[in-house]
Image: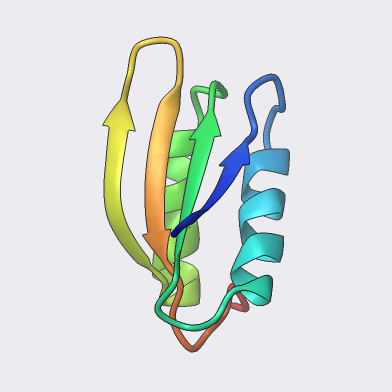
Length: 79
C-alpha cells in the first residue's frame, strides 16, 4: 500500500520537502503518492526524481490538483 501525502494548500518547496521526507522513511521499491495543487509541482517532482534517481511512475493533472506516484529507490530521496 503506497504512502500518500496530501500537500494541497502548500506551496513550493513544501510538497517536495514532504516527498523527500517520506522517501527517506519508506523501504526501497515502495511507492509514495503526492497530491498537490501548486502548479509548479509537476516540474518540481520530475526534476527531483531525476536528481535523486527515484522513479516517477506517473503524473496526472486532475484539474484542481496534480497527483504524482513515485517509486522510491536506493537513493531514498537523497541527491
